[in-house]
Length: 325
Image (tube, rainbow, N blue to C red; front, side):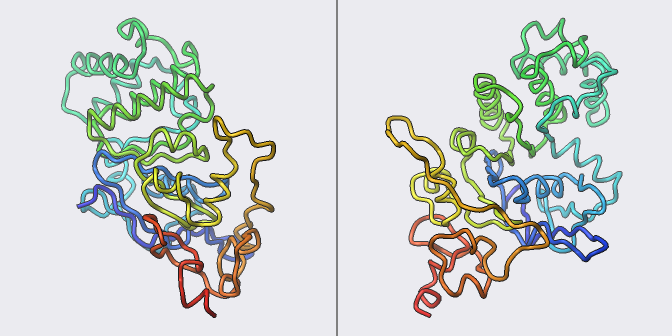
């Protein structure tokens, strides 16, 4: 059984001018100890998917359809207090800006020990000891001393390590990491990625890694789901998608990344921009930007289908009937 299963998830935003569909019927699963990368442009729906899973959708956003199960238990319809317990105990979260996850008025010690005491049966002394161990595990030097510092006394990279420690407090089964390395410089990014990979290996923690950086995905993830305009357009093993992307959008993403040793003067680019939620075209949402679009792409929306490779892609190019129309 998969650790996390998302089935036919739809997220809507009611407005005065009508209802906007932000996440449009997406399904995926994550296995224990697996890192699933979720990649796409800003506005593709990556962060909203993560927020839906951890129960932190901002109103008026709402889950309109579908279901989310964790270890076989449905979590998308839980009352707020029950979901708050699940969020700390079974699901951890790492956000892009560590300052939004840490309270500037409290020491790191207070924030870590409070979280541990809420979710685990420990004494104050045991909780502090575990907090020091967690800081040590995520690579904070002199953890015994630094634990009594305030968030502003840490650098950006060190704060992000504290946030990872906070997410691990109750030994969660799943961590939703939303752009965990975006605000950091490249050398610190590499260290944070190494920590996440090690935690998956040692603790069998599953990670949903949300990012727009294919380099981070290539380095960290086992599988990758590529999102565009609220839908998953391709999903498969990382190595398959990097070497042999099938959906035209994924090909465009891969073509825009410089390759070491390849002397290319101009990188490939995807013309145009992603449609707004109230302007998503009929058929495939990518049709106006796609160099390979066929008639069917402007009429009907494709679902994920088996390609001539190992990944599945939502593209009519892999339907013989559509190509022959």
